[in-house]
Image (cartoon, rainbow, N blue to C red; front, side, top):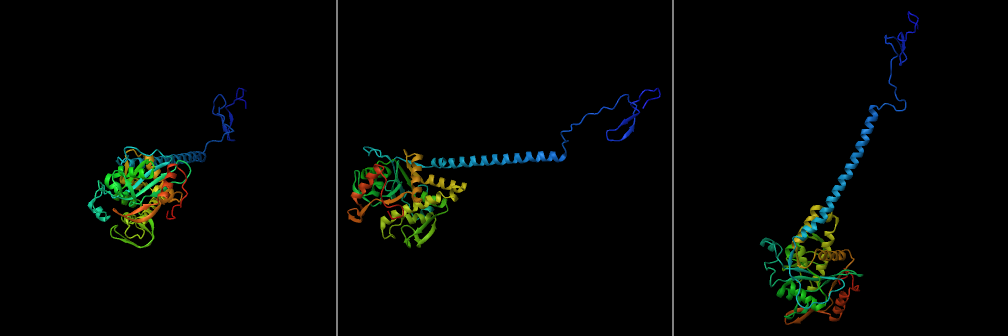
Length: 382
């Protein structure tokens, strides 16, 4: 619209962008406006919340994954650390014989001994376990002697019991019960005797005493054993009923020591000892032990504190022994007794166990050559 002087007046009338007319403001030019993008809607409160929520979910997932990874790494480190920590508590002795020894075998062969050592036991524990108070020095005894064979090639690992009343030549001491070698000269003479009578080179020595035995059993909450018959033995301190049951450390120790209540005497006892070894390894390697930190720690610590090994026996050697025991417990190994011709031969040193020489030589020759054993499987009575 023209003004009073006939010229257009742009300020007289301005069209509002909201579709309403308003009077001019008297400004000399049109009102400037900042253009708005037509392709991007404004970021409202809802979109902001969605974006924040999405980022929070991603961060939560990352934290969960990271936390799980840290826990897994810590658990694996704990699983590795515990056995090595327990290994530091193992007792060591010199069990390596001097002089001429058999040549190295192709496989690995170890002596596993259950002794009457009371090392670390209090008088109250000795009374509870019915062990007496004889110390494992000179004059100590073995309650079990097991030759553990771990093949390097084909074949199954084997636990071969050598009855402690086995009648064998002891270097420098004539013929006697094999247990006498331990009483006379300790682990060193025992290993030397076994090497000379079998011709098998011994790669390591592992011993567990009475106190350590009971502690290991109690650390896993007892061991499941099927007792074949009623067993009441005052010398072993047990009064067990026939049937499958959970034995605590005290009763388990009595079960593997008892021989006067067993009609098979020493032969029956060595079979029960191998039965126990299979049962304890089955319990020790169960998820209830391995996956529960305090159970795993308790078993490993008790096992380490209860072990005595030769000064040259390595952690790897003991691991092989435990793996052989595990194989037997799973039915993948052999549980045997050295072939016997007479379990009750009368001699000047009392009633002894006489080996079947021909069959024993064949067995030990197979061990030396690391040949697969073709004998009765574990659980058959060996």
